[in-house]
Figure 1 (tube, rainbow, N blue to C red):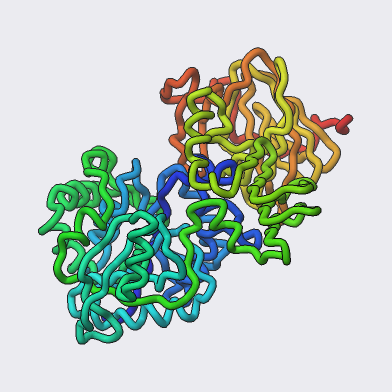
Figure 2: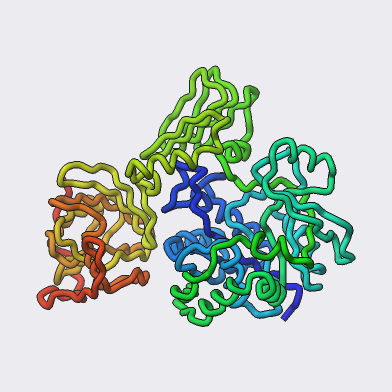
Length: 503
């Protein structure tokens, strides 16, 4: 094994409330399309692929299929370490180090940063290898371009004698504007990018010294791990007992063998809508547009994100306008850092848009809730080639499927039917059913639900290709083992009858 081979580990956690309404708990900012119709996660995977195409991702169980989709889009390979619950960067990094070879040189990087110069980034990381192989934890500091109060700072001391690295004199928490300005003027400070290069054994040793409780909990969690294909699931009970702490507080601020390497390129943690705006070119009046459907007229310093429908800003100044299918944000540019307060307000009011999108991603594709009324709901389902929904049943609702693109393979009780474009199929309540896409192109289906109760918890799963807790019965928040009724066979022969032309 080449000791200088870099093994990227991508940290995919975070809730992303500062970029609401595009980023929400169900789809945090690292998964949202922000730059050139690509997510920050995909861009980060593409950037890290320049160092090694085999990448480990540490992610939430709930987001595992979003991560897999991004890895497929980036043509990256590797495994996912799944956290049963978030425990900040110290727990995530400890688990990854314990599951690696002790000699592995691990590059820990957040999934939600934007670094446009991938070649410069790779060269900078390689310049820290010598210090990391000498047993140091190498952190990468960004040369500051303005006195930011949103970032922590690192003070660099003298050279370590190992490549381009310098010893770290101290870490400074997010400062006031006056302090930030004074730090920049000194010239020895850089922004803390939260990117680290370290041998697995060195990180484990540092955790054992400075955060032994975190390491012990992660040792128990990794000892109890299970493997499901490319998914590595940590032991839930043990990991739940891990203290939630950042690696900065848990280790770096106490450790002596820490070095810093400066990165001289452009970098952003994309932590606010103002930061997103800066990723797009400005016109002569300072306006920035995103999404392809935005326009401005007689406006200044206005950012408009509009990927779904035309949005026009007329006579505006210093505004942020973000349009999504189910929510619109209009904010003064000076209030961009307070968007998280909006999310808390909406959550207290019981509004689902605080955390959920109208469009919900599933491992088989996605569904978009087009319309909802009393006793009915309409969804637009998109099923990937080869995608398969779970074999399921609903107690309180019937469903109509209308195929608008592609050919569907539909299980209905004891039948398996091929439903083609402009054909439909009716599924009475209580009927075991399944939808599949046997084709090589995207399947699109309009699903019309009718009944007295249309909640997502009215579902009995009998079988699921993606291992989503099957077989279970979900009803009213309770889960129990589900077995199909004897009168409804689940593996019938394929038929091509019983469908009608859609109205």
